[in-house]
Length: 419
Ligand SMILES: *Cc1c(COP(=O)(O)O)cnc(C)c1O
Image (tube, rainbow, N blue to C red; front, side, top):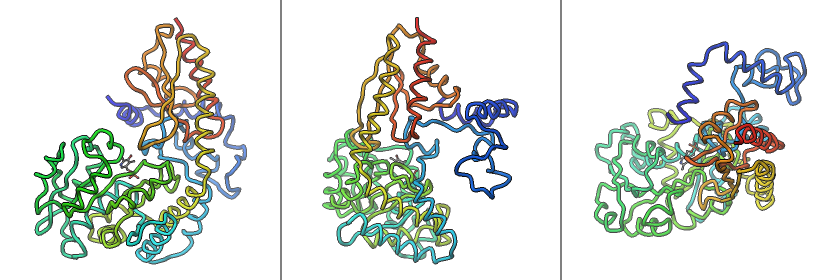
């Protein structure tokens, strides 16, 4: 059973008693009671939320996130200034379609995209993939837009490299297309036919496929097929936000609620103006569309603009240094336990931030699985990544001081299992 399933099962099967128990001890841990005022809580808030921790009130344990921008853990923590503009946006009615176009224009300017490019805010990168492809399939034909996922009269195939298949291609399949899987340049040449609607590239899989990111778009254009790139988690570096447009990709998807720290239910679809316009026609707020279920609100649209503005003006070198410093602090503490060692790495694409691998030899008698569970069940609850043989973590989603809590918990855990 995957960790995710265990997590869900425990959530649904856990007895009320366990939840109540967790609440009590969490209160002990955090040192507050219902009657105490909590910093940051509006004074006039009564009832639900009055304690300042909506999650504890619901009996849900908050998590120290050493795993990164995982949607299952809530993605990222939204920037305060993004919250502020979302609150402003919530005070007025507007035409959402008009707002989409205007926000897209602002995003295009912020990112200095090449001539002919535009953008819309979607409910996430996954929604950007689905509506982007839907727009390619339907064009601006109202009959086709209503008809999806019935592809009668439209193209019906998307080409993807075998190593680029991943759970998010479900969003492509949801339009009704068939994925045609290729491995070599020769496979690709043979796969192209009049039914080919799009060539899809998953950027985190760049190294795994025979055809790399720049060649993929070149070949697509030789074959006169639009090229899509899923770059959801590919910031930092900031330059990626415009790199793929500059390479010539026709459509590009980014998550808004990952490292950019925009609204959790937001993403951006960048691309050639006509394709982006057709994507919007297939998306909420338009009814009788495949994308109507991927509603993005006026608040998220406005919040996404602000998040991008903030993200672009941050000192990224200083942030990266701080993320490494946190890992170094944890490493210094836990490697004092005999047998425990750490090493550092940064993934080439996607989650391109400092990571730390934590291993131990026979001087510590503990399986990785037991370590993961102990951290998850500990107080505070800590979530790290893991492989068969080691723990790993990053620190870019940690709140100030949480690295000290992780260091203390880990050191205690390893000491308790020292041979
Ligand atoms: C996170 C992710 C997505 C989905 O992004 P959302 O913004 O959560 O919809 C798609 N593709 C990849 C590679 C991702 O990492």
